[in-house]
Length: 150
Image (cartoon, rainbow, N blue to C red; front, side, top):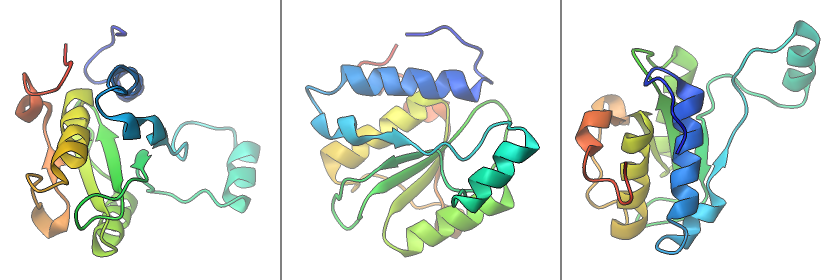
């Protein structure tokens, strides 16, 4: 898996997607995990065009459109370093939670991998509820517990 700084969100996301590929035999649903490319730096003309095409500020980074337990699917806002969720991101995560999706903030790829594993293998029964209904997972919570973790 790729070497990167812990505060590098794109490096964490690339590593998570590599991990998901390696777990496909055990959790084939991970083949349907995808990134929603709403963020990132763009020139003004591209940003305006994307907005006209339906890009929405705050939509979570990752989606797994697989139902488990009482949830219709899973959304993850992946964070790295000391970055916090924006107001728009919190609004989207809250909305998705109210619509019976499991929506969480995960700091680091290991935390996201742990949430994906818990969601798929245990129907989300062991996942926590967070403040205002939005759970936050720190990488330290997942250390050593991630299937195939480094």
